[in-house]
Amino acid sequence: MKCITCKIGDLQPGTTTITLEQDTTTVVFKNVPADVCQTCGEPYIDAEITRQLLHTVEEAARIGVQVDVRQFDAA
Image (tube, one colour):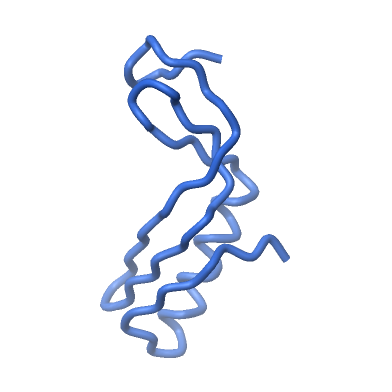
C-alpha cells in the first residue's frame, strides 16, 4: 500500500512512538505496532490499537496521572 501522506513510499510493518494528551494527562507509548512509510516515516495505526491507546489515556486521566511513559502492551 502507498503512503497517503507522501504518495511515494510503501508501508511496511514496524513500530512507532505515540504521544496522547487528555486534559492535564500526557501518556507516551513506545513500540506501538504500525504500518510505517519507508519514505517519509509516517505511521499508520489500526483501529483496535487506537482504541486501546485511547482507553489507556482515559483511565490515566481518570485517576489523575499527569505524565506516563510506557511500552505498548497489546493485552
